[in-house]
Image: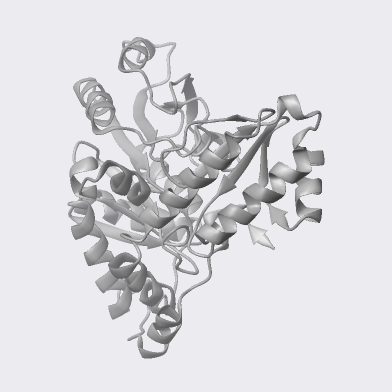
Length: 339
C-alpha cells in the first residue's frame, strides 16, 4: 500500500527509539525532565525566540497559544480556510471562548489590506480585537508557502493596532526549506509559533510552542489547565531532539517527490492539479465522473491511500516513507485507472 494520506503516518527512526532508552527523565510538571528542558531550549534557539513549551499535539499547541494571547470574548483573525478554524473541533470558541473572524485569502495568504479593514476601531458593541493567526505552510491551500513579505506585512499591521501574531507552523520547516531560508528569519516578525515534530520530521508525538519567556510561563499554566501537564515526558522529547537535529533538511526530498507526482498527474487530462510548493498535492477530480469518496475507494482497491478535501478535491501528501519509485508507481496506477 502506498500511503499518501498524510505526513502524520511517518514512523520514528531507529535512532529516535534508541534515544528514548537513554533519555534522562524526570517530572516535567515540576520542570525536572532534563530531556524536555533540552528540547525546549533547542526549539527556542532554532526559532530565534526566548523560550519554548512541549505540548502533546499541534491542536493543543494552537489552543494553548490562543488561550494565552486572549481573554474570553476577544476577536481572533485568520484566513478563512485555516486549520485552526477548520479542523480543531472549535476549541478556540468552546474552550478559549474567542470569536473567529475569517478573512478570505489568496492561496492561504491574508491580504494585508483586508486585515486592515477587518480590524474595527474600539466600540462598545464590538469584541476586542486581540490576535491574528497565520498558517504556514497552509494545508487547505495545497501546502502553499506564506512568503516572508506577507508574514511581515500582517505582523506590522497587527502590532500597529495592538494585536499579537501567532503562527500555526505545523509544517513551518517545510516553508523554510521551500524558501531556502533560515526558519528564525521567517518567523522573526511574529510573536509565537507552534510547530509539529510528528509530521515530516517523523517523531512519534509532540509539538512545541515558542515565544518570549513571559508568554511561555502563562502558556505552561494553560497547558496544565487543559490536561497537558506531563510527567516523564522525556520519552517524547528524546525522539523530538533527533527530529529537530536530523530530519529538517531531508524535507526537500518530500518536496521533490510531490513535484514529481504533480508532473505525472498533469499528464492526465481529466485532472486539475493545484500548484505544488511543498509536500502536498491537491487534485480536482470534477471531470472524472467520481466524487472524492468513490475515487478514493477505487484508489485503495489499487493500493493507494489518500484523503478527501472536498466533494471533488483529493489530497496526496509525500513523506519520509514515500520514495521516488512509489510516486512513479502511484501515478501509473492513477493513469491506468482513469484511462
